[in-house]
Structure formats: structure tokens, C-alpha cells
Amino acid sequence: MSLSTEVSSFSRRSGLLRWRQRLERWRALLQRWPWLVPAISFAAGWIGFALVQRGYELARLVALLAIVGWPWLLLEPLIRRSLLRRASGRISSMIVNFITQSLQQELLFFSLPLLIGAAQPQLGQVAFVALAAGAALLSTIDPLYERFVAARPATSLLFHAYCSWIAALTLLPIVLHLPLERALPLSLGLVGIWLILALPRLLASLKARRERMAWLLLLVLLPLIPWALRGQIPAAGLSVGEGRITQVLNGLEPGQGISRLRADDLARGVVAFVAIRAPMGVAQSIVFEWRHGADSERIRSEIHGGSKTGWRTYSRKQKFPHDATGRWEVRVLTPQGQLLRRMVFDVE
Image 1 (tube, rainbow, N blue to C red):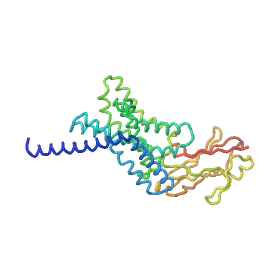
Image 2: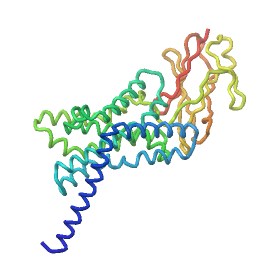
Image 3: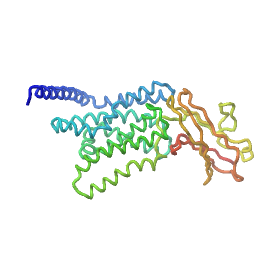
Image 4: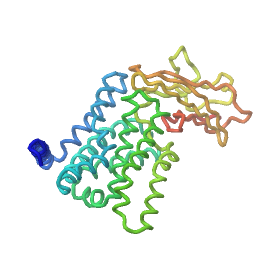
């Protein structure tokens, strides 16, 4: 071995040793203060949510800082293999696991306020937020995390994919000014690519052929299940600041809200009004869905981010069926069917 090769090898080992020492100090700090990263991330998430609500461009910077570690999560399988080749397998694996768990905590707790702020009081969206909150808590409790997540490559992969998807789903629309109809399929596509990258590690951990086939089937279904249940996913980044049913509209100022009217009054028409807050620069389609029994009508509208009070838009319905009595429901949706607001009124 030449002198230059020895010097290069020594320099590389010294560099790795310094990084290990820094990570050990950071790890010791987090062991003393295990809620430091979650608390800071959760507070930053609420700050980001408040900035999005007010249409401030600063929200994009806050989201960008939060998502800066996201590429690590996407490239983690490649990074892990590279470190295992270059250094001690046990130490390298420990370093990767520590960084990954810390980033999972940061992204989950930052995303949680955005999901809470967008969630509507319906079972599916409440369950979705509860699942995200449970995953965030699990990432902070080391004994549970080690036992149920990190102990098996398969469960670690699933949890990792979930964290990556939540980060992409909530933060990409803000950082890249993406409408949600693009953000949702993009986030699922990125996670699908990540699952392909992680596939060799998963298959190597499974010995039985039946297990491998079952996990391969599950990985194929993973991106498809959220898409099939997209109506139960809160539209993170969008929120309805105001929504009402009225019959009076002066410009974009709604009149008094109504919850009940007579059939004779339908000749004046009915207006579903909303003010929707979106990240600055985002152009987003929304859908007003008027439902009466088994009948429904969908009317599309466009909103643009940046307004501190929310983008004000409405849908006016003037043609009603001969028998219009009963409960009417107006759902404000994204084009994929994610619920933004539900308003109801009764016709007597």
C-alpha cells in the first residue's frame, strides 16, 4: 500500500471518527431531553400552519427548513449500504438508525399541526390524524420504537415509507407551490420509488418464499390503498376559514347564513360561500358538490393562495328538482375528493 493511500485511508477514518463523536454527543443530549426534537418540531409546525393561514411567503421557508432532512429518508437504503461497506457494520447501522429516527420525529411532529388544521370532523379524517399522531409518539418512545419498528427490517421499512409519505404529502405543496391534485399522486409516486430502492434489503431479511411473496404483494398495494382512500386524507395546506349557506351575496360579501328555508324561497337561488386559505402562490381547483338524497351535482371553481383572509369563492344553485324538500348537503372538495368543508341546510 502506498503512502498516499495510507494517508487517505487514515484521513477517512479520522473523518468518520469525528462524525461519530458528534453524533454520540447529540444522541446523549437527546437521551437526556428526549422530547426536545418533537417539541421544537411541533411548535415549528404550528408556526408554519399559522403562516400558511395568513398567506405569508415565510411559510415556504419554514416548510423548506423542516423538509431539509427528507432526502436522507428517501436515500436511506443507499446511504446504509454505502456506510456498511466503508465502516464497521454495527456502528454504521447504529448511526443510520439514530439519524433516521430523529428525522422521522422531526417530520412527523412538524406535519401534525398541518394535518390537524386541515382535518374535518368526520371519522375518516379524524382517524387519519390519530394514526399520524400515534406514529409520531411511537417514534419518540425508544423501547416501543426498538421493539415494534427497528427490530425487523420489514416493519422498519413500512414505518419509514409512511413517514416519507406524510412529509411529502404535507410539505411539498407549500415548498413547491403544488396544487393538491398534483401533490397527492407525486407523494405516492416518490414513496413507490423508495420502496423499490429498499426492496433488496427487505428481501434479504426474509427467508421463507411465502413471506417474500406476501410482502411483495403488500408493497404493490401500499401506494394504491391511500389513493383508494384519498377522500379520508385531510388536505394539508388548505383550510376553510369561513363557510356558509346564504341567499344574499354582495360582491364577495355573503349575507346572513341560513340553515332552513321554505321551498318557495328556492326561486331566489341558494349560495354556498367559502373563504379558503392556501399557501401563497398555489393555484388550486376545488369542487362544490350539491347533494340531495341520491342525486348530486358538481361545480368546479379555482382558488389562488396568498390572501390573508382566504380566497373567497362561491357556488350558486338556482335550478332545483320539483321535490326539493329535505336535507341538502354541500361538500367543498379537492378534485380527488378530499373534504374541505361540509355545509347543510333543510328545505321545508
